[in-house]
Amino acid sequence: MLSQNWIIKFASLLAFCLLPLSAVSASSSPDQKFVAVDWQEGDKKNEGASRSFSYAAAYISWPGEQMGAWVDANMEFMGEQPFARQQISHARKDQVISWQVTELVQQIIAAGHPAIDLVLRGIDSDGTSNFHSKESDNNKAATLIITTSAGKTLQTTAAMDSFLDSSTFRSLGQSKNLKAGSKNIGLLRFNMPALNSGEQVTKATLELTIKKQFGSSDIGVFWLAKPATNTSELKAFLPRQLIFTEQFSDNNWLANWSSLDRRSNAERVQAPLRPNNYALKVQFNPEQNLALNLVLMLKSILSDEPEALYFQYDLFLADNWLATKGGGKFPGLAGTYNTAGWGGRSADGTNGWSARGQFGDTIVSTDKYDKSTPLGFYAYYPDNGQNHGAAMYWDSSNKPIKPGKWYRITQYVKLNTPGKADGVLTAWVDQQQVFQRKNIRFRDTSNLKIERLWLNFYHGGTAKPVQLMELYIDNIVLATE
Image (cartoon, rainbow, N blue to C red; front, side, top):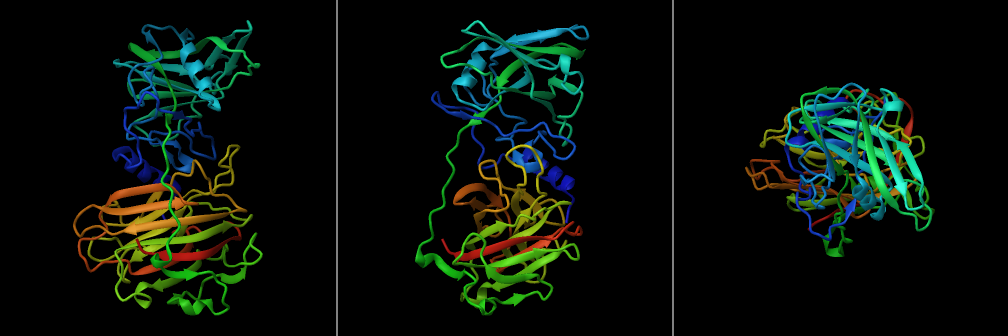
């Protein structure tokens, strides 16, 4: 298993070089609605905003191929017209630079966003402005000064500040610098002002203090936001689509499956929060990596192996769930043929493939992602850039996966036309789409198909769990298109 840092680096490179299929275009309609971006500055425990992620610990990617996300004064996503700009050259240390951002702040408040999120970008200039961050000197940190229609003056220091650098995968939110310019994008968050009913913002000024100026820069202020998107909802499967179901209602449930690894730690129990249901309890312990290895060979239920298939199951993480050290594997579909697609056996297009699930480290934070565990695909295919599988994390911004609740996980695999990069991976959580790629080359031969359903629960590669932890699965479904 790859370390979390390596996974973040590979996923960063993938996201930075390829436009995700779910990304929105750089233009927006006049009535486009914009929503807040989940971003964090990061801390010693959790990686925050980086060149490819708005929140790296949660694997929340920026919504496009460019570094960052913003809306300009023309209400164009990734546009070039700032709400305010300042040309800076020969600035002395500790000089205060100000921008009039009244229209922008009014726009953000009217949109009902939870905070005032701003982007600082260089415009047609080669210089870089290095400002004091709140970690450098809180008295010199970015400040927003607001005047209201009631005659009040409200002054607030940035709640979060960070900057993005195209030359590093790292999160820079704990830096003593806040850079903006030709190679850096500054990020700022201010708490919403406490306004009385009917009270309005009449003036807003952003102030930053120069730490060091490099050359001449032209710094524009933009709105840190993204266009709202309509997520694809998965409809319930029709009876004619179902080819396999498992509710663990029968004591002899194992007879429905092809093989169970004897090292597995799993038992049929009453399902938590579902008094009339049974589930399979899966236990991870510090003594070994494997928790469950259960296989259903598709030739045992079908005359021919399929080339496209839905796999669905219900997942419940127990209160003792704490994934660490890079996470591990969850269930998925595969065509390994006992040759390639797992354990460092790389896929070359003729020998096998796999698309298991992936779980990352459990997040410990003070935001909505606290105690959540990122999920994704862990896929072996020829173009993934390594001998091991490639982690492709899902967007959990609308539904972080936390202990104590059932989630319905659905994964879809459609194998590519042999030799062409048109294979599909899609995922839904509670019927809402959270991931899709349509450009994967799984195979170069029609001999490779979907061979098995692989219920693989495994911590690591090599790192074992740090404590006993459990999960439950129920309502397993395989369905055709």
